Length: 113
Length: 114
Image 1 (cartoon, rainbow over the protein chains, first blue to last red):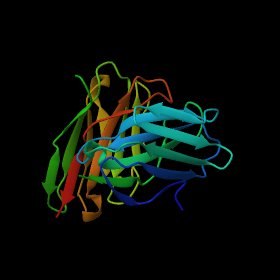
Image 2: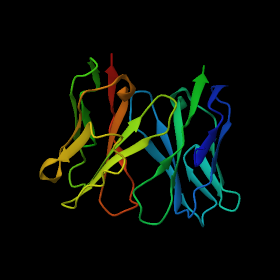
Image 3: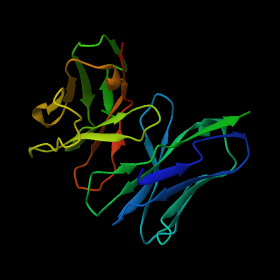
Image 4: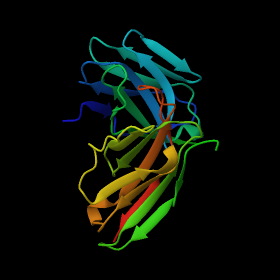
């Protein structure tokens, strides 16, 4: 069983609509949680990072939330654009100062015109 | 350079052949990582280099896999006697060195073993 699970596996929405992606993790102890965007054929790019004491972090139209008690995070995308079509990966750092991130399998988002 | 670069972008090889994948990290980054991304799987840690320290090779899946980093900059991941299950995207990342700092990823090399 993955320590970082994401849902849905894939999602199709119309341009301009909002969507929310989910990440549940069992990693403990927990240091921080990142959301990455990975365009097709490219490497992942960091969108947000939250420590266990943070509840929300925004980056433009992307807003990430974190509930460290329930070990859940979400990424909300507002007013989606065609360029938002990508995979979104939830990544957990299990302890302060570690380089061994634990990666979710990602949610593949497709935004249609 | 402006970002992490990797070459080749695509590699098709026959089973049993050896392949070398190259990574150029961001200038000044002392830490370098290799990951494997198989279809439908999360990124799998392979190896970590930090400065002149001995690398953490704990993620290498078999002794057919090896990596080196010359002069603290460019890194090469070598896969010997490739197998079909080695087909994946191999991603390289670098960071400024302090543990836990953000990793910046290259575009990856897509390896296909026929």
